[in-house]
Length: 273
Ligand SMILES: NC(=O)c1ccc[n+]([C@@H]2O[C@H](COP(=O)([O-])OP(=O)(O)OC[C@H]3O[C@@H](n4cnc5c(N)ncnc54)[C@H](OP(=O)(O)O)[C@@H]3O)[C@@H](O)[C@H]2O)c1
Image (cartoon, rainbow, N blue to C red; front, side, top):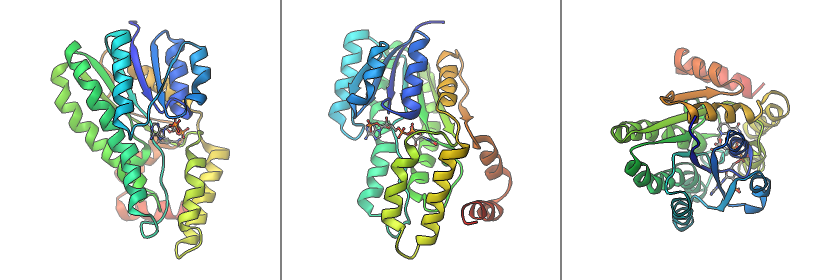
Protein backbone atom coordinates (compact mmCIF):
# COMPACT_ATOMS: atom_id res chain seq x y z
CA UNK A 1 0.00 0.00 0.00
CA UNK A 2 1.45 3.38 -0.99
CA UNK A 3 1.67 6.15 1.60
CA UNK A 4 -0.45 9.12 0.66
CA UNK A 5 -0.47 12.86 1.25
CA UNK A 6 -3.90 13.64 2.71
CA UNK A 7 -5.73 16.87 3.53
CA UNK A 8 -8.66 16.55 5.96
CA UNK A 9 -10.97 19.48 6.76
CA UNK A 10 -12.92 19.52 10.02
CA UNK A 11 -10.07 17.60 11.67
CA UNK A 12 -10.33 19.24 15.09
CA UNK A 13 -13.23 17.09 16.24
CA UNK A 14 -15.47 14.05 15.67
CA UNK A 15 -15.29 12.24 12.33
CA UNK A 16 -12.42 14.36 10.96
CA UNK A 17 -10.21 13.92 14.02
CA UNK A 18 -10.86 10.17 14.24
CA UNK A 19 -10.12 9.78 10.53
CA UNK A 20 -6.89 11.77 10.89
CA UNK A 21 -5.79 9.41 13.69
CA UNK A 22 -6.68 6.32 11.64
CA UNK A 23 -4.79 7.52 8.55
CA UNK A 24 -1.75 8.64 10.57
CA UNK A 25 -1.66 5.19 12.23
CA UNK A 26 -1.64 3.64 8.74
CA UNK A 27 1.45 5.69 7.86
CA UNK A 28 -0.15 8.33 5.64
CA UNK A 29 1.00 11.97 5.87
CA UNK A 30 -2.02 13.90 7.12
CA UNK A 31 -2.62 17.65 7.04
CA UNK A 32 -5.36 18.41 9.57
CA UNK A 33 -7.36 21.56 8.82
CA UNK A 34 -9.84 23.36 11.08
CA UNK A 35 -10.34 26.74 12.72
CA UNK A 36 -9.36 25.54 16.22
CA UNK A 37 -5.61 24.84 16.15
CA UNK A 38 -5.67 24.29 19.94
CA UNK A 39 -7.95 21.26 19.50
CA UNK A 40 -5.42 19.54 17.19
CA UNK A 41 -2.40 19.41 19.52
CA UNK A 42 -3.00 15.69 20.05
CA UNK A 43 -2.81 15.15 16.28
CA UNK A 44 0.49 17.04 16.12
CA UNK A 45 1.87 14.77 18.84
CA UNK A 46 1.21 11.71 16.67
CA UNK A 47 2.83 13.33 13.57
CA UNK A 48 -0.22 15.02 12.09
CA UNK A 49 0.21 18.48 10.53
CA UNK A 50 -2.39 20.91 11.94
CA UNK A 51 -3.23 23.93 9.77
CA UNK A 52 -5.57 26.80 10.65
CA UNK A 53 -8.27 26.85 7.97
CA UNK A 54 -11.70 28.39 7.88
CA UNK A 55 -13.41 26.92 4.84
CA UNK A 56 -15.39 30.15 4.40
CA UNK A 57 -12.15 32.15 4.05
CA UNK A 58 -10.46 31.58 0.70
CA UNK A 59 -7.10 33.00 1.81
CA UNK A 60 -6.77 30.42 4.61
CA UNK A 61 -7.50 27.57 2.18
CA UNK A 62 -4.98 28.92 -0.37
CA UNK A 63 -2.29 29.21 2.30
CA UNK A 64 -2.96 25.62 3.42
CA UNK A 65 -2.82 24.14 -0.10
CA UNK A 66 0.34 26.15 -0.93
CA UNK A 67 1.99 24.88 2.27
CA UNK A 68 1.26 21.23 1.44
CA UNK A 69 2.48 21.59 -2.15
CA UNK A 70 5.64 23.35 -0.96
CA UNK A 71 6.35 20.65 1.64
CA UNK A 72 5.16 17.52 -0.20
CA UNK A 73 4.81 18.43 -3.87
CA UNK A 74 1.39 16.79 -4.15
CA UNK A 75 -1.98 16.08 -2.53
CA UNK A 76 -3.23 12.53 -3.12
CA UNK A 77 -6.40 12.60 -1.04
CA UNK A 78 -8.75 15.42 -0.04
CA UNK A 79 -11.27 14.53 2.66
CA UNK A 80 -13.83 17.37 2.61
CA UNK A 81 -15.44 16.86 5.99
CA UNK A 82 -15.88 20.27 7.72
CA UNK A 83 -19.51 20.98 8.36
CA UNK A 84 -22.26 21.54 10.86
CA UNK A 85 -26.00 21.16 11.16
CA UNK A 86 -28.29 24.18 11.21
CA UNK A 87 -31.74 23.27 12.53
CA UNK A 88 -34.77 25.50 13.05
CA UNK A 89 -38.01 26.24 11.23
CA UNK A 90 -37.67 27.85 7.81
CA UNK A 91 -39.85 30.72 9.01
CA UNK A 92 -37.63 31.49 12.01
CA UNK A 93 -34.19 30.97 10.45
CA UNK A 94 -32.58 34.14 9.14
CA UNK A 95 -31.39 34.11 5.55
CA UNK A 96 -27.99 35.12 6.89
CA UNK A 97 -27.81 31.91 8.95
CA UNK A 98 -29.12 29.87 6.03
CA UNK A 99 -26.47 31.32 3.71
CA UNK A 100 -23.74 30.60 6.26
CA UNK A 101 -24.87 26.96 6.38
CA UNK A 102 -24.32 26.79 2.62
CA UNK A 103 -21.03 28.73 2.91
CA UNK A 104 -19.58 26.04 5.16
CA UNK A 105 -21.21 22.80 3.99
CA UNK A 106 -21.26 23.40 0.23
CA UNK A 107 -19.25 26.44 -0.89
CA UNK A 108 -16.47 25.76 1.63
CA UNK A 109 -16.13 22.20 0.38
CA UNK A 110 -16.20 23.51 -3.21
CA UNK A 111 -13.52 26.15 -2.53
CA UNK A 112 -11.11 23.60 -1.08
CA UNK A 113 -11.79 21.27 -4.02
CA UNK A 114 -11.17 24.01 -6.60
CA UNK A 115 -7.77 24.79 -5.12
CA UNK A 116 -6.70 21.14 -4.82
CA UNK A 117 -7.88 19.99 -8.27
CA UNK A 118 -5.10 21.55 -10.41
CA UNK A 119 -2.50 19.67 -8.35
CA UNK A 120 -4.35 16.36 -8.71
CA UNK A 121 -4.84 16.94 -12.44
CA UNK A 122 -1.14 17.62 -12.88
CA UNK A 123 -0.34 14.22 -11.30
CA UNK A 124 -3.22 12.54 -13.18
CA UNK A 125 -4.42 10.96 -9.95
CA UNK A 126 -6.19 11.71 -6.70
CA UNK A 127 -9.21 10.93 -4.57
CA UNK A 128 -11.69 13.50 -3.32
CA UNK A 129 -13.90 12.21 -0.51
CA UNK A 130 -16.89 14.37 0.43
CA UNK A 131 -18.78 13.97 3.69
CA UNK A 132 -22.42 14.15 2.85
CA UNK A 133 -24.80 12.48 5.31
CA UNK A 134 -27.66 10.07 5.42
CA UNK A 135 -29.33 13.50 5.51
CA UNK A 136 -28.23 13.95 1.90
CA UNK A 137 -30.70 11.24 0.96
CA UNK A 138 -33.43 11.58 3.59
CA UNK A 139 -35.05 14.53 5.36
CA UNK A 140 -36.18 15.37 8.89
CA UNK A 141 -38.43 18.14 10.29
CA UNK A 142 -36.79 21.51 11.01
CA UNK A 143 -33.68 20.46 9.10
CA UNK A 144 -34.49 22.18 5.79
CA UNK A 145 -31.24 24.10 5.44
CA UNK A 146 -28.99 21.29 6.65
CA UNK A 147 -30.63 18.75 4.36
CA UNK A 148 -30.55 21.23 1.47
CA UNK A 149 -26.76 21.51 1.83
CA UNK A 150 -26.25 17.76 2.05
CA UNK A 151 -28.59 16.98 -0.86
CA UNK A 152 -26.56 19.58 -2.76
CA UNK A 153 -23.28 17.87 -1.81
CA UNK A 154 -24.66 14.62 -3.27
CA UNK A 155 -25.57 16.12 -6.66
CA UNK A 156 -22.49 18.34 -6.80
CA UNK A 157 -20.23 15.35 -6.12
CA UNK A 158 -21.90 13.28 -8.85
CA UNK A 159 -21.29 16.02 -11.44
CA UNK A 160 -17.71 16.52 -10.27
CA UNK A 161 -17.06 12.77 -10.61
CA UNK A 162 -18.03 12.86 -14.28
CA UNK A 163 -15.82 15.91 -14.91
CA UNK A 164 -12.64 14.70 -13.28
CA UNK A 165 -12.68 10.96 -14.03
CA UNK A 166 -10.84 11.54 -17.35
CA UNK A 167 -7.97 13.07 -15.30
CA UNK A 168 -7.65 9.95 -13.13
CA UNK A 169 -9.36 11.55 -10.12
CA UNK A 170 -11.96 9.63 -8.05
CA UNK A 171 -14.85 11.33 -6.25
CA UNK A 172 -16.34 9.46 -3.30
CA UNK A 173 -19.34 10.35 -1.13
CA UNK A 174 -19.53 9.31 2.52
CA UNK A 175 -23.00 9.10 4.05
CA UNK A 176 -22.73 8.81 7.84
CA UNK A 177 -25.76 7.83 9.89
CA UNK A 178 -26.00 8.88 13.56
CA UNK A 179 -22.45 9.35 14.85
CA UNK A 180 -21.50 10.41 18.35
CA UNK A 181 -19.54 13.68 17.89
CA UNK A 182 -20.07 17.37 18.75
CA UNK A 183 -22.54 17.56 15.86
CA UNK A 184 -25.59 17.22 18.13
CA UNK A 185 -24.44 19.73 20.73
CA UNK A 186 -23.52 22.29 18.03
CA UNK A 187 -27.02 21.91 16.60
CA UNK A 188 -29.12 21.64 19.74
CA UNK A 189 -29.00 25.09 21.45
CA UNK A 190 -29.36 27.20 18.27
CA UNK A 191 -32.36 25.06 17.28
CA UNK A 192 -34.11 25.86 20.57
CA UNK A 193 -33.11 29.52 20.37
CA UNK A 194 -34.64 29.82 16.90
CA UNK A 195 -37.75 27.71 17.27
CA UNK A 196 -38.11 26.68 20.92
CA UNK A 197 -40.64 29.35 21.90
CA UNK A 198 -42.76 30.24 18.85
CA UNK A 199 -45.33 28.40 16.74
CA UNK A 200 -42.97 25.48 16.07
CA UNK A 201 -42.03 24.93 19.72
CA UNK A 202 -43.64 21.51 20.11
CA UNK A 203 -41.78 20.15 17.11
CA UNK A 204 -38.55 21.94 18.06
CA UNK A 205 -38.52 20.39 21.55
CA UNK A 206 -39.37 16.95 20.13
CA UNK A 207 -36.52 17.19 17.59
CA UNK A 208 -34.09 18.45 20.23
CA UNK A 209 -35.08 15.64 22.63
CA UNK A 210 -34.67 13.08 19.84
CA UNK A 211 -31.18 14.35 19.03
CA UNK A 212 -30.16 14.21 22.69
CA UNK A 213 -31.48 10.67 23.06
CA UNK A 214 -29.73 9.49 19.91
CA UNK A 215 -26.46 10.95 21.11
CA UNK A 216 -26.83 9.22 24.45
CA UNK A 217 -28.13 5.83 23.32
CA UNK A 218 -27.99 4.94 19.67
CA UNK A 219 -25.15 6.66 17.84
CA UNK A 220 -22.12 4.88 16.40
CA UNK A 221 -18.61 5.99 17.36
CA UNK A 222 -16.78 8.14 14.76
CA UNK A 223 -14.24 5.33 14.31
CA UNK A 224 -16.88 3.59 12.14
CA UNK A 225 -16.62 6.41 9.61
CA UNK A 226 -12.84 6.69 9.98
CA UNK A 227 -12.50 3.02 8.99
CA UNK A 228 -14.83 3.57 6.05
CA UNK A 229 -12.76 6.52 4.83
CA UNK A 230 -9.60 4.44 5.21
CA UNK A 231 -11.16 1.79 2.98
CA UNK A 232 -11.82 4.43 0.29
CA UNK A 233 -8.31 5.90 0.65
CA UNK A 234 -6.62 2.53 0.25
CA UNK A 235 -8.81 1.27 -2.61
CA UNK A 236 -7.41 1.47 -6.14
CA UNK A 237 -10.96 1.72 -7.42
CA UNK A 238 -13.13 3.01 -4.55
CA UNK A 239 -16.92 2.77 -4.38
CA UNK A 240 -18.82 5.92 -5.33
CA UNK A 241 -20.83 5.94 -2.09
CA UNK A 242 -20.27 4.52 1.37
CA UNK A 243 -23.19 4.62 3.82
CA UNK A 244 -22.06 3.71 7.35
CA UNK A 245 -22.98 4.19 10.99
CA UNK A 246 -26.21 3.82 12.93
CA UNK A 247 -29.39 3.80 10.82
CA UNK A 248 -27.65 4.96 7.62
CA UNK A 249 -28.55 1.94 5.50
CA UNK A 250 -32.12 1.38 6.85
CA UNK A 251 -33.00 5.08 6.41
CA UNK A 252 -31.68 5.18 2.85
CA UNK A 253 -33.58 1.96 2.10
CA UNK A 254 -36.81 3.43 3.53
CA UNK A 255 -36.45 6.62 1.55
CA UNK A 256 -35.80 4.75 -1.67
CA UNK A 257 -38.64 2.26 -1.49
CA UNK A 258 -41.47 3.60 0.71
CA UNK A 259 -42.69 6.59 -1.26
CA UNK A 260 -42.94 10.18 0.00
CA UNK A 261 -46.20 10.01 1.96
CA UNK A 262 -45.33 6.88 3.90
CA UNK A 263 -41.82 8.21 4.60
CA UNK A 264 -43.36 11.48 5.92
CA UNK A 265 -45.65 9.56 8.26
CA UNK A 266 -42.93 7.30 9.60
CA UNK A 267 -40.38 10.06 10.19
CA UNK A 268 -42.93 12.29 11.95
CA UNK A 269 -44.13 9.39 14.13
CA UNK A 270 -40.53 8.83 15.20
CA UNK A 271 -39.98 12.49 16.10
CA UNK A 272 -43.30 13.45 17.74
CA UNK A 273 -44.18 10.52 19.99
N1 LIG B 1 -22.26 13.31 13.63
C1 LIG B 1 -23.21 12.89 12.81
O1 LIG B 1 -24.18 12.23 13.24
C2 LIG B 1 -23.11 13.18 11.33
C3 LIG B 1 -24.00 12.50 10.47
C4 LIG B 1 -23.93 12.75 9.13
C5 LIG B 1 -23.01 13.65 8.62
N2 LIG B 1 -22.16 14.31 9.46
C6 LIG B 1 -21.20 15.24 8.87
O2 LIG B 1 -19.91 14.91 9.29
C7 LIG B 1 -19.05 16.06 9.21
C8 LIG B 1 -18.23 16.17 10.47
O3 LIG B 1 -19.08 16.41 11.56
P1 LIG B 1 -18.88 15.74 13.00
O4 LIG B 1 -20.06 14.90 13.25
O5 LIG B 1 -17.54 15.17 13.12
O6 LIG B 1 -19.09 17.06 13.90
P2 LIG B 1 -18.06 17.88 14.83
O7 LIG B 1 -17.48 16.99 15.85
O8 LIG B 1 -18.85 19.07 15.29
O9 LIG B 1 -16.92 18.34 13.82
C9 LIG B 1 -17.12 19.36 12.86
C10 LIG B 1 -15.79 19.81 12.31
O10 LIG B 1 -16.02 20.79 11.29
C11 LIG B 1 -15.17 21.89 11.54
N3 LIG B 1 -15.73 23.13 11.02
C12 LIG B 1 -16.95 23.66 11.25
N4 LIG B 1 -17.06 24.84 10.62
C13 LIG B 1 -15.88 25.06 9.98
C14 LIG B 1 -15.36 26.10 9.16
N5 LIG B 1 -16.06 27.20 8.86
N6 LIG B 1 -14.10 25.96 8.66
C15 LIG B 1 -13.35 24.88 8.95
N7 LIG B 1 -13.79 23.86 9.72
C16 LIG B 1 -15.03 23.97 10.23
C17 LIG B 1 -14.99 21.93 13.05
O11 LIG B 1 -13.75 22.52 13.39
P3 LIG B 1 -13.53 24.01 13.96
O12 LIG B 1 -14.74 24.39 14.75
O13 LIG B 1 -12.28 23.88 14.75
O14 LIG B 1 -13.33 24.82 12.73
C18 LIG B 1 -14.91 20.44 13.37
O15 LIG B 1 -13.60 19.96 13.22
C19 LIG B 1 -19.99 17.23 8.93
O16 LIG B 1 -19.91 17.57 7.56
C20 LIG B 1 -21.36 16.69 9.27
O17 LIG B 1 -22.39 17.31 8.54
C21 LIG B 1 -22.19 14.08 10.81
